[in-house]
Length: 409
Image (spheres, rainbow, N blue to C red):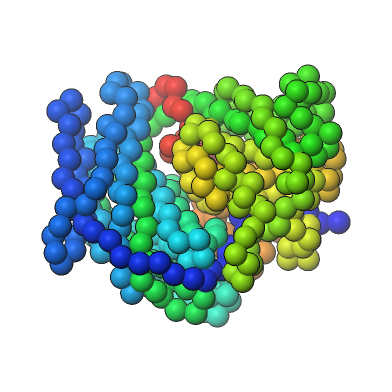
């Protein structure tokens, strides 16, 4: 039996409408982050800016735009004046439940084009169009993918071949219905990670139990198999300088022991999305344990699904707030720990080293392509055998806003 794990790219339906436009922000104790929403009216837009912790180490700034119009399927440019010590930029857009969204444009101050509708030198064929709802962004130098309807996410940089530099950057959001672009509206959360390049970090985990595998919030802290699974996951992340930090243990309703794949554009409800919405923590990663997920995937069985690549970082209660792990397919705790680490890798911004479709790889030079590299954690099948992450993958993970950086180079 083949167990497939990872991000599943979804389709979408439905619509929504309208909104407003512009904000300029400064803070006296740190270099300013400027946010400009351009539109024809030049009207001010509601936005809030949290300048984050000020100190010598890496820190976060959070910008919230309550409403951004996406007329005819393409938003106006959003401009960000990024500070001199910027490490990474994460953008999460949320909108109508059955509309597909993507961060489909990202351009830098020196003419860098990291994400584009029509990336230079890239041929978009029908295979890519069928695989990715927004094929241009998916094949861009800094891949931008749509995990499901209603939400889009982007981590930049998400491979060491591109860079986010100080200066004026701009991005745009796209929206798509079942067959064509449509007018919609999104809220946008922006995370700017700043400081020296980190070498060590901490990842908090919030466990949610449906009763699958006999695991509950009460018994798992002392359960030998569950702790073996944690140690398996810990081995992957400790090796690249990321410690597993605080744990919480939570029970969720047993009706979620079996969940769907969350992919059907014709369905107005999804048990997977309802389960993800129970992830109420705004730190770390919400991790849900179920018996089974859907009934097939590319001829195999689904071992896990992440809420996105990246998932909605540090945003609780969304329809993609977490990762889900199936325990009923391979009860070996080594395999379960592998799925835990793999899906968390997606949520933090890593793609498969090799996709099942075409010659699509993760854009990271030190990971092997092809189907003979199952010893990499981000290969799309499960193994209880030895596996790990590359230096390039570690470089990406340390730029996720979810990882709490603890020191710097």
